[in-house]
Length: 470
Image 1 (cartoon, rainbow, N blue to C red):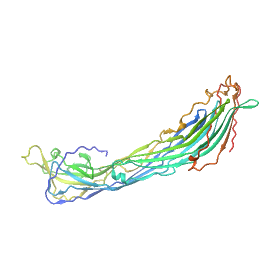
Image 2: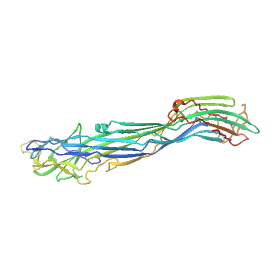
Image 3: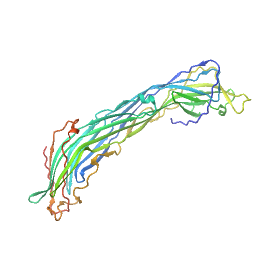
Image 4: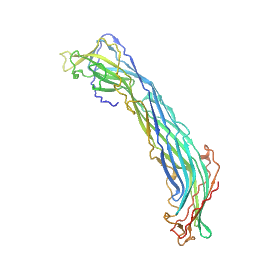
């Protein structure tokens, strides 16, 4: 609670006259919060080489979260207070409490998009072909009941998860890089097969910690005053021990009426985190032949790419009380003069019947995440994300050199010396789409990547020719 609460001195009770039972104060613990999450976006690739392979651009966002608490905690003044009773330094007013929480949370499915392309960059010749451009969903709504954790109140984490398998694509390519003058000569070629899928994971974690206690203040007139010294007395094991301090320091005159006030409160601190991950599982084998020299790279089934939002977390805090509080009327009384040192007593007013008092509207405001409201909305922007998978790096250029300002030509002394690539023929084959729920166990297609020779700019330059077959 955002209040200036000074410490109160300890106090005591001595018996007399008939006892009365104070009424129960029921503190409602109704609150709710909704959270909206922005998307996290990242681009990686191409892979396996910087000049030839597969890239991916993806975005992912956790689904909107709704959380609500309910129920009530019952407080009861357990100390027997008797009209005419003498209160001496050293006693406490004990208030018992019984938690009765309810609560739950639920989130809509995580959503995102993935766009993956086969790309090549051979000198001034470049191109791409889209492999997968789809919206994805987590396939489920994480939800859980919070009642047990709230009633325990000791920071027990409640988590829920949802996983979804989304669209996939199976694609094959052949690529020929040619040097053409009158006739075309293929100087580099590759065959490529790729199967890639999408998976979404979504998790939500909530960790409630509950504190029970009383806001205590002493006043010379009935009611609440923000200027009165206040203290929040924390309870434990179902009881709050509220001390009555050394009255001699309050500046009261003998016989003066004052009030010892006890307002039961419940304080909730609840970190909430939500995270989503989009992954593209794939297996890849890259095979090529450049200038008569062949090679391959093999990558077993695993995540080609993954994008994790990381934990998007915030704290939902709330303080609960109602307008009823215990206000015990007391009369200040100095001790007998023959007692050593300063001392004072208080006498319970003979008219006290254990009744409750009521706060004026606006007194002791509820504080929390949303100021004076316990129902609110929170918006979290998307972050930079955590990128993983074997596709986040590459093997560098397949052929060393800088093709950014020239043709790729055969170097001196090679079988294709002086011949420059000025044509690329790309053929595409698409396999029937596989069942989205079974494809990970059926990844048998190989992914191969093409390499082409990079050299210095030659005297011939032509346009890219691309053919496709579906």
